[in-house]
Length: 240
Image 1: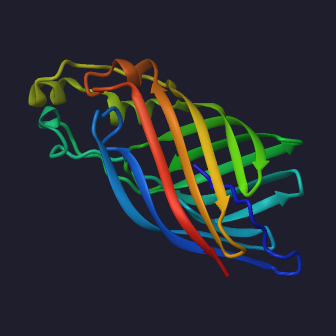
Image 2 (image 1 turned 135 degrees about the horizontal axis):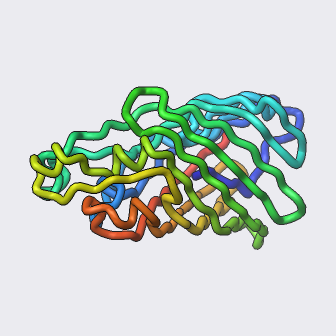
């Protein structure tokens, strides 16, 4: 989930730096009916539109770039995890930890439309495998407000679905949940909404949400309590 901004740093500056407080709302575990809130420091930093650190992308580089497109990679974090203490139903299932992922991405903008694709590969040995996302956005300024929204989908490989939604015979015996085999396939379809309001030349507020519906193996898993998959962020940023 990225951030869009209604303000711009002067063109003669190589650096664009914005930081501020934020909160992240996300499921307690993938498929959970409970949400949790995590406060964190939000950053949006870039150098010559080449190197950047933005939100969950701790460090990234635009290998190819122009006014209309970017192609690059980053080290990214998300908070997808699961603990047997999260819910009584999970007792007997192994914990799933979050960690860094390698993100490869590309986006292209034509007029008000932006197409974006990204692949996330687990690089920390958490068993979260590989996921791929495709999104289409339409953006429009309304006074000091910049709105961006559009549909998308997420595909996951067999390693991801087995770790987060599968139940082996041994896990079934330990947890009491039925055995459930998974494979690669569509994880979710979702809709993105992003709104950034320019409060002053230095201050802006951002709200972003991804509202999804779990599909295929994610939807049918005995672990899944609710197919609605909501992830959202809110922040206030100061531009230096």
